[in-house]
Length: 397
Image 1: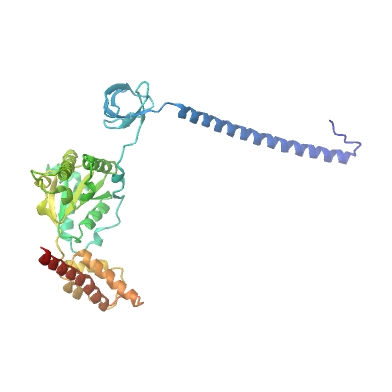
Image 2: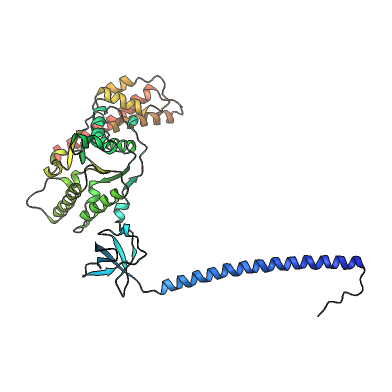
């Protein structure tokens, strides 16, 4: 139906033409918007069709790559079943095709159609992994000799491997730190990882002990695989005596499983390059009960004793822990003399308790009296505990 515009004056015709032009521009804009929406919806439809096509595909088998024969063929194994010579899909990156890799296999042809990520035990991923610790050598007091030995054994091969090549010797594979608890063994390992800009993986020996046969050994293997992926890496095994005790002839089932875990650890240490980017540091309070196989050359080549700090060491540790504290008229030399036999952890606890006494009194600074109370609380409680244990042994044997 044609709109009846009636008789119009020239001005009215001009206004009407202007209105029609504006209306045409609006309609053209709407057309462009609708065309853009159409293209977007067509792309979305195409994506959904591709997704539906993938979902309709039959599931693939998960297998293990045994050997790469050439650019087009490989030997694979589906779980613990037979081995097959199969084709490699052309889109698979050849760099990732290494023996032991997990692959997806087509159901009909068993061809390798996808590379799968390496399987990791949740326990391994739950270990303490620090990309680069913030602890430095400045945060450690009284262990200059031990730090120097540790740097020679671990830091020097990582930073200057050419020195060992020129001399013609292999650097140590591992270092064993031994001594009383609380003397800074873990702190030294973290500071070393910070210095060489390495990933720090800490695991307690008892975490590698598992209930079922073979689980502990598998855990050790995956721990070293994780370390290689994140290299350069420092693996720190605390309380290694939990799995590294001397092996006996007559053992129970649980002890045999611990021995399997220990043998896997020895095999992993024998299997990696001493000049590589993975180093192992272990710590123990009982070096006398360790299996001799752990301490032979080629495993833990360097043994470093971390003893209780002497007077000078205690003074240095106190200076480190009070560096950021607001102290007033505190004689650290006197405190170091009064804390003979205390470990580094004890001295840190004393500094913390002194600060707590100041907070209880609503003061913003710490005095000598606060430290005296802290010494009595920390070291006095340890003495009372030791007396109670001795009394219990006398009474009950």
